[in-house]
Image (cartoon, rainbow, N blue to C red):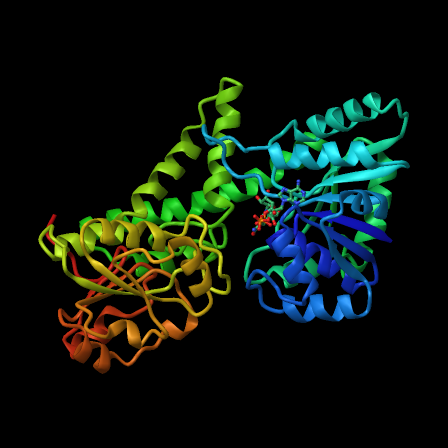
Length: 445
Ligand SMILES: NC(=O)c1ccc[n+]([C@@H]2O[C@H](COP(=O)([O-])OP(=O)(O)OC[C@H]3O[C@@H](n4cnc5c(N)ncnc54)[C@H](O)[C@@H]3O)[C@@H](O)[C@H]2O)c1
């Protein structure tokens, strides 16, 4: 089948590559000429495990190509997938300008029946806006052409995106035309072999399903962070509490790790956008607002601990920082807790020596030569001359460090762990002081 994917970011590139891998002919279109040039040279602009192989194999075999040519892109696919960004607007609601720009282009260049698929995360009512936009441009062109708009939200996780796309938990198809459900069923057949994962529904339900899923996951995290904050104050260890509640099958162990807040390109903006949607229709979403506020506070947690440790004055302190990406196995630093921490430390006069296994280029791109930030070659080299260590991303290579070396090299022998990677008792023999989330040593308020 011929598929066009608009947007060659985390979602668009993975979607295009996976659809090509099973035999489709895919054209990936992006307005970022530099990105397309790099892709055409075989360079992958993002870090996603397995993506480079997948893209190079399929482009060598002629099943995937990259272009900035809109006309060619619209002409190519029966399926026109929209996978462009939907960042938060000024008031926190989803900014639909990129989605609607694609709709405009499709209306401008289509000459036969097309199925337009919203893969981007978009608020309820967006499919209707896309439809209206395309129709308005067709009217302008005096063209009478049939088309359908489908909501098909994407649930892949960065770091495991290819696996998630190839073996999805579910494929949500929101449509008001049964014929399009059948065509999408054909497109997704290779990813739907083991058992039927397709859940067909009306368009508004599909659009809301994506937000509800992300809001639920964010709620679990913020809830657990609140429990950790309570645990700290009552002298409990949140890790015991986590084990205790996770063993209840109704609760489960997934997504109940306490930490220094959630980040990334999805949870923060999606919780916010859903709350703004609710407000726009006169509903006050108390849970969503609390989830967001708790997360905002949680991202300040490590800084507060470090600051209290230094009696409110971190100026001149050198803090080693392990992890920059918002989670392991990605270079994505959008809304990452590392950013809140390093920016606050530097603003207060500290020096941050940071390392991340894959996000160093992204950090350079974001911060350039920011004074006070030293980007290091390895986790080891961050320790040079450092007073204390902060950990914000649970990359596997941080899980089992040489504690005796840490004790020797950290001037103040203090570790601030935003991911609860270590057993507090294991660090004691080395004379290390360990401050984690809802466990470890407590600092006076
Ligand atoms: N990143 C994730 O893990 C994830 C998972 C599920 C859903 N989503 C959703 O998918 C959407 C895309 O997210 P992403 O992380 O891939 O974004 P991204 O920022 O990585 O990529 C978006 C791409 O769209 C391009 N673009 C912008 N306007 C365009 C236009 N008019 N035509 C063609 N290309 C255009 C940009 O240049 C960019 O390359 C968002 O709505 C997001 O919420 C993301």
